[in-house]
Length: 622
Image 1: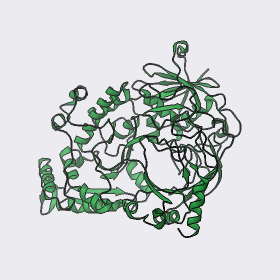
Image 2 (image 1 turned 45 degrees about the horizontal axis):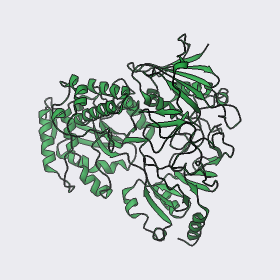
Image 3 (image 1 turned 90 degrees about the vertical axis):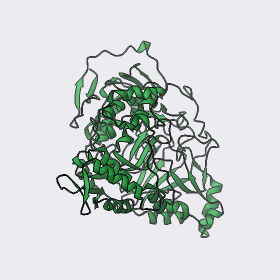
């Protein structure tokens, strides 16, 4: 009989215990009438045909060879993938790197929501997405020569259900069963409320070798060198120092259109640097080839060295729209009574002077996020459209009237600090919500002070808060910072023992089931730091997940965006933008640049002439 495992349907909170092995008596779909495609497309169209030779932005004649040295701050202690404990090694199989493991499909960097078959040869699915049937490639192999089979696919998702993070489990909770049909055929069955992005979520998962793990405990961390199937294998490692990958010359997928012209470096090395300042100095000395620079100050002023004047050093803001959303935000824990009134949350938001923060701390480097789907057509604009109103109208009594009549915007200050008008409006909102300042302290009718403790886990976050806390204290709010180490931070957040916490909200583009984890009352509570429990939000998340057309998706996400913004659950701090990278000019690249994601490192290669020029300059002290 076919094997299966069962996960909870969308409308029911998942049980995060052991997986449930069972058999299914449901008949197979009518595959004779099914349409098999060479990939998954959110909107149904593909730029590249079946059997395409290479992506336009990849050079099929790119030379192989050379090396790439990068830095990481991740002090890895495990090679077990997709595990809810330990720290995995950099480049260990995530979709953005694709070194060690293959996934079922691979994203196109010049299309939105389109993935082409990698391990998967083709896929068919029901019109309502209640099932998906995947055929694997006959030539797909693990590095030990064993074929990749349907059991590997099933085993990977069993592992996720048993041992992965709650948020990852939520992402796949629509799966009702996975059935092995044959060695190279696997059937996914889904609950209601899914669309093409459910299949895209499957596409991103690094597939694990079932035959290798069957004699090992996948619930535990391990430093045993893992078995992969991807274009690289683990060559060497030393904890707290480095991880080095070497290219697999006979990689089984090297001639597929999704891989031809990519994976060109012979070695890729990640060196561990705990301190960003030390990492910058290592880069400037040529010990690293490329660096992602997330400090506005150093991006502006930290690389004004002779090598840049000579054209040997490049600074580039690259593309990245596989994910959108927020890299950082402050969430108020509405599980606590004093944060449940939206007027209080709006008052707290008014006290945060974003323009001062951006001017003083970031050299006016960032743009204030005004959407959870910023810089895309999914973001709310103007007032609700007719399609949006159809979705919002059933919840009118729950929602603020302004949502229906006004475009959302944050107050803009001069950036000089001490925004008196903002604080005056904040004080008025506090009073409307039943709070007032008595002897310099904000108190409710029972005389209880308004306390606000910010939970953080790194000292750099304090910079964001110090001025904000000063403003809050002027309102009589007893605001303070609690700095704890990462493990304690995770425990406190898991138990919801905080007033306010920081979190990013990366959202796939188009959005997928992370919306459930972040915002829905039935999602993974750990990721929902604001404790949002809203019938409107629940319904709009489901509408976004069930959207079948671009217009349906736009209406659902814009309506959801409005509800989240007007409810003031969070203060957005920074939005996801493409990485700012500084690198030594030793690389070759295709003349065609992918518009949605810069294809680094996959489609880059080492140019020997450029590399020699850089090496000579570094030997001469730049």
